[in-house]
Amino acid sequence: MSGIEVSVRDETGRAGRLARLVRQVLAEAAPRLEEITGLATPTVTFRLVTPRAWRAEVVAYVERGVQQAFAGSEVSERERAEAAQKVESWRKTVAWTWPMQEGMTLTDPGGQPQTLIAPRALHHTGLRRDRPALHRFLVHECVHHGQILASQGAVVPPRLSVRRYAFDDRAVPVLFEGHAEWAERRYTSETFGGPTATDVLRRSWRYRLHQRHLHEHTRRAQPPTSAEPPGPVLDPRADGARFVAAAVAGIGDLARFNKVWHDRSLVPTDDEIHQPEAWLRRVGL
Image (tube, rainbow, N blue to C red; front, side, top):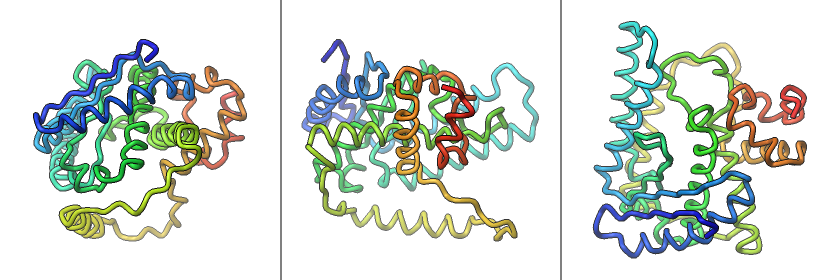
């Protein structure tokens, strides 16, 4: 495994078979993903947890993000109230959306990447019964580990929007997801000889119920229509993957492209996602 330590922990006590499968996939994929991305992943940690633990971990991560955003600076009462509202919004959201989440890669209290998976959610999303889809998901999340380890907090994981930052126009989430999609596609093509075919995932009744609730909540929460025409909506995975493919080809060197994980000013803007040549001119890589 090229010295890569793969840790898959079944904290539910009932998902041993799934844990073995996840470990096998990651042990095979992680070394090749290092070559594809040029990002080192000396350790890869996946945790299989209960839905309750998953929700608690995500909310704790959001709370740590708020603390980091406010660290070493004056915080107004308005900012504190907005941050508290943000945490509470996340708490309510994960309570409803956990059956719709295959998993999530975030950082632990020490800043190290970890992927949290609730096996029950894999049942609701349909991934547990679709081996190719599960394989792609695990590979995708493994790439996030390399991004986070390379960045060391400079760029990813994406910051919570609790305070204005310089470079707020940067498309960090699109880069984060698009790069993982780009690497996942390359790995899948090499491993399976092309894109893996899959039937439409068989979602559970509970998944569909929560999805309807979420759509209704989102519709009610939409602000009044603005007179300004909306800009193009970015698809984080598809648009991001196209940008990364063009950017890597334009630069011709993975090490030079990977400087983007160390310097937020190098991250493309929303406009540059659709114009990689403009990004190349600006950053001069």
